[in-house]
Image (tube, helix red, strand yellow):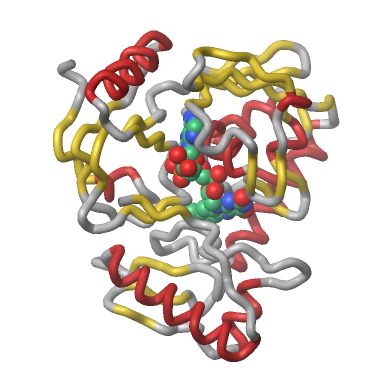
Amino acid sequence: KEQVRINEPLARYTTWRIGGPADLFVRPARDEEFDFCLDFARQKGLPLHIMGNGSNLLVRDGGVRGLVLQTGAWRRVMVQDRYIKACAGAMLPPLLALAVRQGLSGLEFAAGIPATVGGALVMNAGTPEGSIGDVVREVEVITATGRRCLKREEITFGYRSCSLRGAGVVLTVHLALAPADPPLIKERVRANIARRRARQPLEWPNAGSVFKNPPGLYAGRLIELVGAKGWQVGDAQVSSKHANFIVNLGRATAADVLELIARVQEAVARNFGINLEMEIEVWG
Ligand code: FAD
């Protein structure tokens, strides 16, 4: 009970550094605490929101009603042979570093993605090089019907989608990797990070790509073509380095970001007849 925080500002937990308060906020560190939180939310009739590293979330300025369960304190990782079992709150960068040290390949695409493994799983995070769904072996999840262990074949992955999104709380993710030469893996990771640093505005708080790529096209290119690079509402700006990123120049609000998103969508629809779909998730 003492671990539950009231009116906790969520800007602290999102990579955009934007977001109003959660009515109730908790960071379970032990297995049984998840069951406790879920039971508590159910008994009190509270909406339950699961948060990983908040790297794909725009939390509205008015905040979120109900209970936010943030997984960051639940992050133990175990390696056995070519398998890694990670608790949902484990961050991808240290997980990748561990894989590299163990000479395990398959996670290199994740270099520079500031996500938890649970968040990455439900978004099927990835790049053209690969995505997390490619290396998943098994997932432990709590759904409305209790705890289940799902094999890879029981989960459907698509472009930034996974059948487990919104279906419950992902507790652990088992990954199956492939043995490879550590210097080779290291080199691929280094190259991926260098590519990100060159292309992405990592110096400002952001949430990665704001829009999904329409089939066969790049959202960033469409946004660039309508001349939206550098457009600004308050402290929210369409990055001039990468048009599919909106950066927080300091005091951006969720309202600023949403207004900028609407302007970009309108310009792309008017010029190309294409509706840009949001990749980020809006809470509140
Ligand atoms: P959150 O943003 O906290 O949550 C995202 C969704 O996952 C929400 O629906 C949430 O409810 C759900 N969720 C989180 N944890 C759990 C859980 N344990 N159980 C059930 N549901 C859960 N994405 C890419 O795909 N490829 C990229 O290359 C990429 N690059 C990025 C670069 C930067 C600089 C940034 C800031 C973001 C980038 N992203 C990228 C976006 C983001 O990292 C991914 O979408 C990631 O999967 C979100 O993980 P998270 O832990 O931050 O989840």
